[in-house]
Picture 1: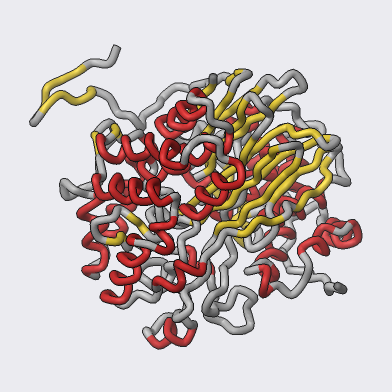
Picture 2 (picture 1 turned 90 degrees about the vertical axis):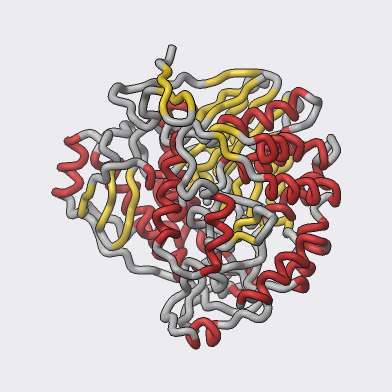
Length: 546
């Protein structure tokens, strides 16, 4: 058992929670009643608690998502956006709950303050938060317990506090260092709420947020209405008006999540599903569509890595030219999945690394969780503040950390993601789902900015081509394309692969940390209804099973 020593004000653990000198192995998790997989163990337990109360997978996902805003604030919060794919009644349902730019925010106003591109911090990148709206929309369509019951675990964690987990503490410290460089008084509330002792909370230290708990109670009692058309909306709007922000009550009141039809591509006998734009799920689908023409016998083969990277480069480069708010897209996303178009992209892949150039066809016409229950319902859900805590703005006395999703806008009027009032930006967060012959296999996702479609591609190939179980599929070493011919490889990628990719013209770097390679979760269901789950070894993740 751990050794304890007395230091300073009390007893502390005598070990480093981020030091792991020996390889560790986590086994795949099985159950047949219900399962929740996410990047923070306490949040997974919150969802499991709801399943045991008789709730379904969607109820569990809402409880988990709400808890994640408390127990993993370094990645998401009440000011986040969210997306979901739900399997229920034999059908897939897609939800886009990403908010637009405020109606008073224009590119001219940003440039007038001396910015050549969208800033990452402050009021300019703040868009209308969609996460709370997603919870309410999912609950109204699929929920079985009361909305207030679903938020009880999150309220308890916020009110009573919880011990900070290792990866969470690392991200918290990074954000503290980042915000410490800012002199703007606008960030004072972040320090009051998230650094109450003049520093970031440490591993194992209990952190609580009474403001967050009060806000969650208002959301629970009003079934989400307080956030968009009630007391919280007024507080957000008033604070923005007083401090130079742009979001107003009318922006919040107008917001409604959108139910959308998921898109899919056939890959080696399976159907991989993603949401349509403004998310970047199309990147994974295009890349898989390119790769579908080839067979891959071994994961640890230079040809496998090379073709994966080159297909992803083609898909990502095209996405940067076309993906935006669907109301502003210049073509139908389905055109990008047509066999002729995929073949054209495939033809550009040779034996050596190529410079990516977008081929845009003419159109004729950033926390992830998975949950499943014993009734056959499954959900793939993701929500994010984008960059860490987001904009750095925390609305006083509410615990609401506002996202900086507007960083994805361009100030160049020639770019498809040009900032316009009421427009939604290119979105990085994407939930995934896998089916075969019309039968649900299950939800999957890999969070982490532009790594997300790259993670989806690799996890799908690990599963479909190489037969890896959910945990092994997530454990496997990853790569990440950065730009041009530059690619990052995890340290665990075999040495012969690293050397062979360099010989093929790839500019390879090996980061010290694996933090940039994404954090994923998977739940698969077999024909007998048995669930198999895997959780991310690069995070504080857990699979809670019943």
